[in-house]
Length: 66
Image (cartoon, rainbow, N blue to C red):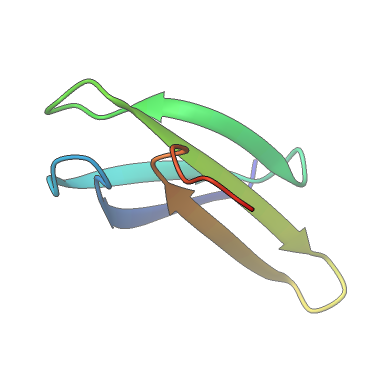
């Protein structure tokens, strides 16, 4: 199992929390609730197996794109 622990800040309330990313299944797109305000946090992970790097993006998923 490939696991990485990161510290993130909730995009809704700013609460600092620990997040465990399991990237053994490759690229993922999912939601996890903030432990402080209970709002959903949108998490996107991209795994570059050639360079063995993991990148992730955290947002509130309430941005509007035009």
